Image (cartoon, rainbow, N blue to C red; front, side, top):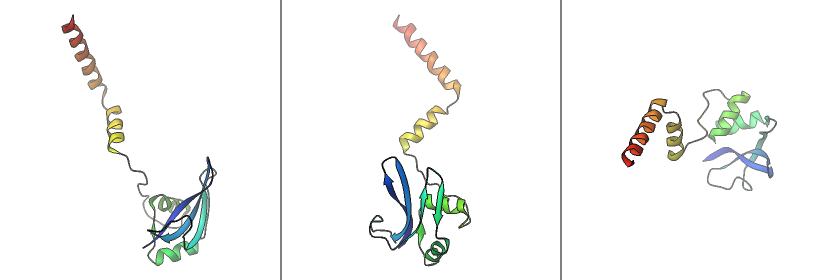
Amino acid sequence: MLAIRMARVGRKKQVAYRIVVSEKKRDMYGDHLEIVGNYNPHTKVAVLKVERIKYWLSKGAVVSASLHNLLIKEGVITGKKAKAVSLSNARREKIAAKNKPVETAVKHEEKKEEVVEEAV
């Protein structure tokens, strides 16, 4: 299966991405079929070979989630943006705990006061 995805290039802390077409299982850094563009996230500039991207999509190439969102932003394809980042369960629980109502925090403080009173 073919995949169109971003390969990281550039120096440390000066990242840039090449947009490459390669086999899904192969190394995208050296063993790609074609370079169809590049993207600099610092300046938000994307240089795309639109016709070649559409050609590979017509051949059945699959686009990564991040690149899918970039192509929608640039107007190459249409549709809804994909969820590109997934949260771990630990992170999801931490965010849920942070967003709990204040009432639970008040209950916890009351319990702490009860424990302190029992200890005295």
